[in-house]
Image (cartoon, rainbow, N blue to C red; front, side):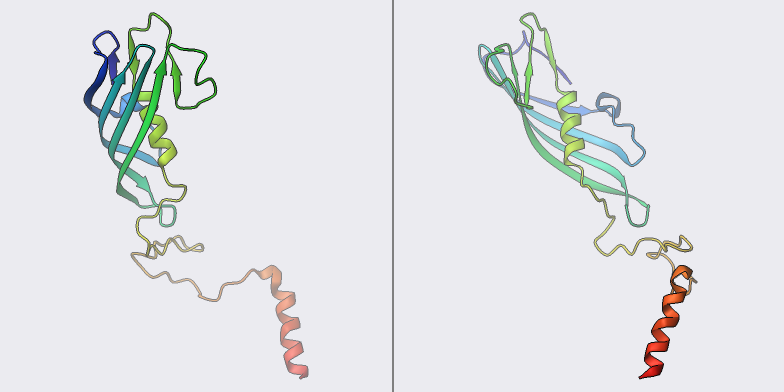
Length: 170
């Protein structure tokens, strides 16, 4: 996913990539990447290269409720500015500074950041996911568990007795 700066002509250039998992360095146990397609519009001027990328990916995620793996489609658009002008864009997160003799720009880092920042905080395989039983660990989407429905913490047993005494006195 590297673009040679010398081969770019001033104005709009268009590139299409199929990114690999090794390019993105996304080896994480809860996120798997099946395929990533990137379409980038690269607009070159004298001091700046503005890259706007459309990303489409198929991700394998782990459901936070039932822990089952599921696939989800992901789409995002992001823009990065590569510049040799150090005086502008000093604190902007979307700006990458280039040295005067830079030969190429690597789009993989921006793509990786976009994917990671766009992941949902909570991943669910479906809105109706029932999760797992907190006692026996059964996946409630697949089977009913044999746990007693009225579960309680035995440390509260003393208060339970107080509740029954108050109702008996009335």
